[in-house]
Length: 246
Image (cartoon, rainbow, N blue to C red; front, side):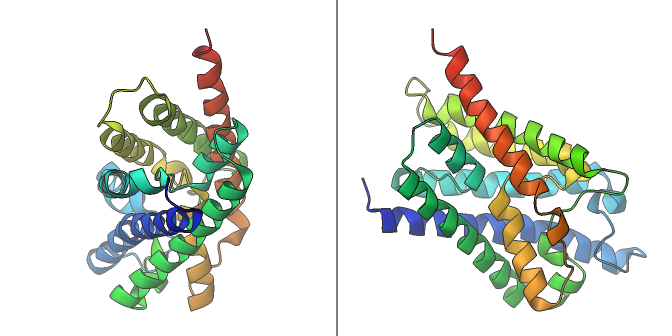
């Protein structure tokens, strides 16, 4: 097994790529719409601009990047790429606490660097128009509703992770593809409700960089993307253990 430092670096780099390309795709979607439609602020919803096709494009970008990172770095760190996944594995005694803390810190740092690199690549419009792809509930969606959809979507994601990656009886070679497609599907379905994060680090990166660079201040929504994904992932891990115990 690789050292904790090597595994943490792999988690950081993997989450960096996830945010750079995935959240970046969300920001680019808003920036494209800004140039072709009367969208003048970063808080106009993606789905309101281009329909479900926007969310499919964003979701499939996330899915492809996650699949690529799983195949590239999964043998090093397990490619959690998500604090909710790490916490769920910790809760079910599959992962030690010291390693879990290091992973979560690395994931959040990687996410922040990914957002910063996207800003450096695209420029200030990525912040002022695209909001760096930050997630927020859509108009008419309450705090509790957003938490619920994040929990349900992450439950599905974690259930799939348990079945195709954690379970020792899982068929080999398919984890990256199936997990990536699951992420794509969940983001497409949940995007126009909660923003489709499923991942506290994915939301943290754009939030901290938006706040630092003068973009939208969305911290009031951050608990949604901690509570929902963590609850969903932990419940899924325990549920999977329960139904496969016999």
